[in-house]
Length: 172
Image (cartoon, rainbow, N blue to C red):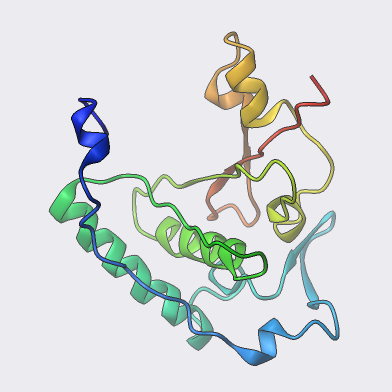
């Protein structure tokens, strides 16, 4: 948290926590990813291994990243993790949801994915949360009467993180 204007000018010294290795099989555009049903009305993308098969070998890389994030939290008391990249289709959503799923496995964990992509959000579809529900983060910013519970949705399965949609400026 920034407390003074001068802090904005300070260089960021936190190390890069992790870099997702490029998996040629996952990045192929030839066929869309297969989805695995986990509820009658929801289909979560199969690459979200931390949600679907949390003890699998594939989910291990996200559990390792979770340990690093938890270690940084203990050392610095940071509570927010941002996942970013300058390009589209770099795996930001995949990494975000899988890391959130891994973090949510910890006892007493409360994890919230906040989607701030107003143009090309894919998080709701990947989580099986289709259709626009509620005002989203944009609505909460513009309507001071809304509270967090008005914009947060539970994900499936029930052990997953919660989710706040970006929202839509046009819908307000």
